[in-house]
Image (cartoon, rainbow, N blue to C red):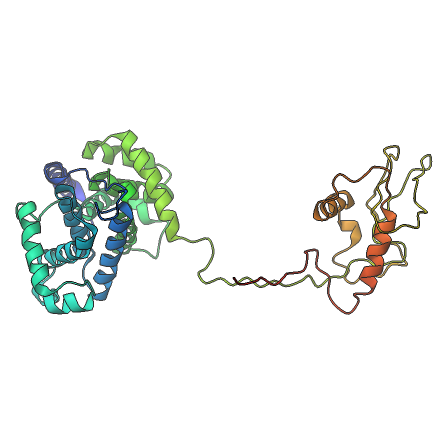
Length: 387
């Protein structure tokens, strides 16, 4: 949509004013409550699930986004006026969907009622849908024309482009209609979130536009304040709505691709093997380590507190073979490595008088016996039992 000149800006301001006035007359707060008895009322989860089902029907029958937005609006208005039971929810939803299609779509695009009832698997007959239509129209006073969140989204987007023509310069391959389609997708995703029901459609649309404008231009705040003043909205409510919308839209961009498969693969590096142990502590010349000549290699031994230098970062001895030059012992912090070993074997409270060299020698001999396979720092995977 290309809006230029003061005349077009005045038209947009008039459209926004009329939409705000219409919304004020028709909008009513409806937040479904979690019922202790599932048959007592429609829960928030059931409301969101039926809207997601209606979104699939919109794609299945190739209808306009305006049809889905109007259907959701009719559903929420009806549920705000009538306390319905969950067993009637599918019939109410498909009736609102059919009413919206007859209001928005061209005659040749309106699905046949029998086909809609059959292919939607709503569990209702054509006669039941027609009876529910009559009930919905009576409760809504036969007034289906209202300002939807999508109407406000189009108006706010057009005003933003007319005020800031450089809005889409950072998106050279996206034209205004494609950009509106992207925002429409976000809006349809937010409609199936009961946490956003306390906010008007105009507030929801402005929150989505503000989050998008913030990514595109540095002086986005001045533009949003101008739109906020034109729509006569409360800034604190907009901030709260923005936070909820941003949290809900984060699900549209998963951090990992779907159907990811994680396969455990051991490291293809062997630790340094030698006769005296992989890791050796090096006492100072003035200190000696008791128990260094101990013959008992069954328990790890820790040097005394008198040893000033327990471990040093040093290259592997020349008599030790290295499997890969990229992973050397000198690149590892021995203190951190040994702390991890202690936690792995629940030996954090080991006696201070024990020495480490015996355990290192046994670990070295064990590593020599594994020369045929790769070594992993992780414990081996254990099979699970299926109950």
